[in-house]
Image (cartoon, rainbow, N blue to C red; front, side, top):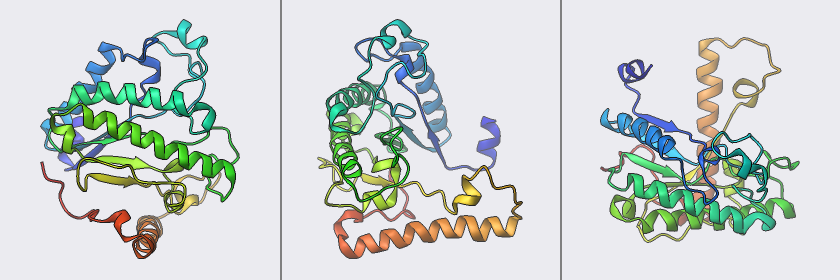
Length: 264
């Protein structure tokens, strides 16, 4: 599979990693697991690919939710950890994210700018009625305010490890990585950063939904429809939102031209 990816000239690979089930009671990452992740990351980098590394699947407030294979006895007795963006779990979420990124920052600080960090994947209040859909209500406002602080903690932890992390590109999401959530500038803020123009807003757009995510749809899509309805609509959706944002808060997406090459 790896050689096939290379032959197809794929330029960027996102490596989503679960960390919660490979930790001890102090959130230290299992050395074997970290070594395996490092091996995969460095292999992709050796092929001159861009690599996005993140915290993935760790959006829960209960540490026992997946029966961790590393330290299940500890996990069963600890219910307030991982990433859950509400006020009740904010302190533990910041503690978790900080400890993970301190270790990842140290592990990868010598990698060049082909490696991009993403603070977390689709942070959200799992189980909430608005888990996947942003609404203008108090729980969504609370989630955005907490995510702002969690993103800041992650960026700070990464920068403090030094090396190439001092100037590394870092991707940060809003609630569920929704563009419309990121536009709520009263509640969501991009982190303050010691590096200049090195933050990227992470946005996920599964558009049109019936084609990209709706498992109940059985209609077949031909190649032309996929290209026109899927790719183009999704691109237009994102661009329209970003253009609106540029008009209302220009500095928010300053210097984020996706067509330019990220320097090494």
